[in-house]
Image (tube, rainbow, N blue to C red):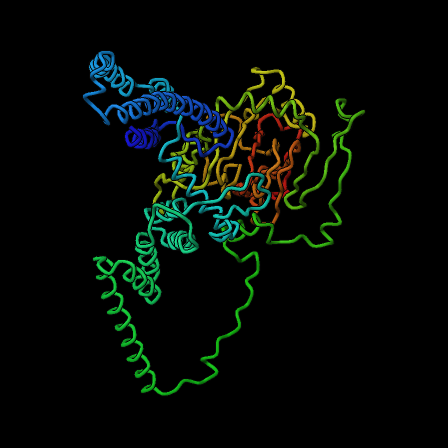
Length: 569
């Protein structure tokens, strides 16, 4: 009986895991931390149900054990003198009764099914489970965070991230899974990093169902694919020390040795050729000292990641001295004459201002409450048609226009979910819209609805413009309200680490601060686009990022922000 029970519980654990794999493909949880919190409550409910099942099984097993103990004692006595024991008529009757009735009852008890409640609950809840795509998305988000914030695998594995409240360690299996996902994407760089971390933890004595041979197999191959044949050979030798009959490793060993010998021969032939041509001037061989590349010449991706880490351009003291904070009433707006708001300059060119304590906790909670049930994949403006559409989804891929082929392609640049809230849905939204109008002096009737976004694991939005450029003549055509003249962005949560809004071209970084909002113009008064406003949302390293934004359009602003005759004014 004990053997039967020990086997049964792991079987149900396997059943639970199998349910986790066969899920609906429509949830896409990893792109929103807000929606992922619901999964914790789902899992908690399942754990409670599982414990009830275990308790029922333990009660059943206890009854079986009591029966076994009673019969063990009875049998020990009876077997000493079987004929004398059965000579008592009551003992003979009870033996007949036990074998005819009671053992049948015991059989029914053992075969009774206590799983109905657990399985029914699991079946109901599994429709809310994440998918393989969510698991892969979360894994790739970890790799993206690793690159952006220059984190080594050990730092992530040990959970030593800045601002963490709940430290979590990664197992050998976790590291191996990350390496496998990178491997399936032909990303041998990250495959090496995470297989090496898995190997390190195995060598440190961590218990695991994985063995070193499996990890070394991936590790040696990923290193070879990066062109480091000598290191790949060393790891292959280590693998063969553990498993001398590993067929693939034996073949790789011969191949790596052949390649190294070939490289050695090619190097010798090259050296001989150089010798025959005569010795070169020693000064030509000396490496010139590498000059530091100015920030403005760095690739945009590099500048973006540097700003996300708090590096990059620094404003000169002279420019900083021209940034101020003030109480602001927007030219004596009646709403703010007696209670002006706090405004501070964040950057000078483009001019970015932040409003402090501009949204109350009650308002932020209400906006999140209204938005959370509606969170969907964020929409983008199709640069060809101008129509707002959902981006094809794999790590938030968005449709973009390839300038070389003229075809619509997918760009992996946004990880978030969003919802749109209209003023007539709730008086509080209308009040927020009016506040933006009062403080900016711009017409809200032609603005887009309030968009609420929640960023998921490693949530980001790579460098982009909010306004339509000249090569996108139909941008926002369906809205009929002209281009996006300005952007207003509320921060509705603090972020423990990461999540800054950065402007790579100018080196500006604006960090999330709960209850504040930032504002900038995307267009010059002439209507021309201000290309220095190209910006991005950095990946969230630790925490949960909630923002809401208002894109304000040109129509209705003719008398509120008169046009300039100078293109860049």
